Length: 115
Length: 114
Image 1 (cartoon, rainbow over the protein chains, first blue to last red):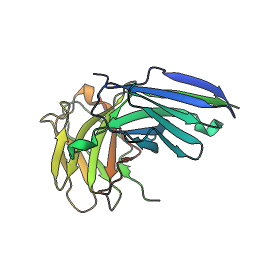
Image 2 (tube, chains in turn green, red; image 1 turned 45 degrees about the vertical axis):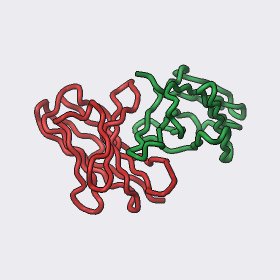
Image 3 (spheres, rainbow over the protein chains, first blue to last red; image 1 turned 90 degrees about the horizontal axis):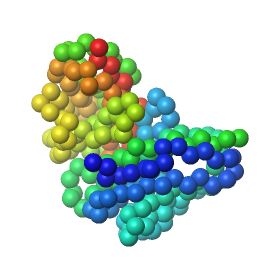
Image 4 (cartoon, rainbow over the protein chains, first blue to last red; image 1 turned 180 degrees about the vertical axis):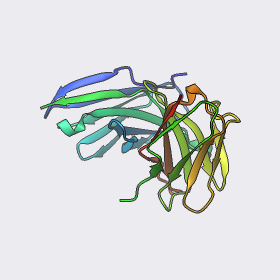
């Protein structure tokens, strides 16, 4: 049951360049999407989110784009820094139910930013 | 900055034993969650808790699991009789009641069942 898919297990970029991490989802009821960053032996750290009523949200070097018709979102990091090296998880929730709003996670993409 | 804390950071137990994993959510948050991540797999939802009761649970959360908020600060996950396949990282998360859907995660407890 892969409602949220991150098809690239790893990505390597040069410092200063753009990192683009992709995520696809299948459940059309998802209406809120989040990106988390995770270092080894730590919990996921919230990075940025987007509601389904928007197609873009920006916070500093991080921008999330949402294409609802394609059920696709992406995280852009510009410029990439070595400290950005981590595993990035895409997560989604269905906020319309007014219930637990559990998060459904993708498998993650390991980003390596080379100096 | 407020953060979710979890204890212990690592718990080793024998199969069949009971374990209690503890979490202190962010103080003004009202929604609480447990997730787990088996090594090499994705983070999976276990249970959510609001207003002193379970609001949703996954099929993983069977009768061996229970949650409790024994006082105003702690949130616990109990596994009554651990199995080898319960070995995983267990993450607690909390969320405020405002229109802010972000969940904030603790550092996790690594549970090893031998």
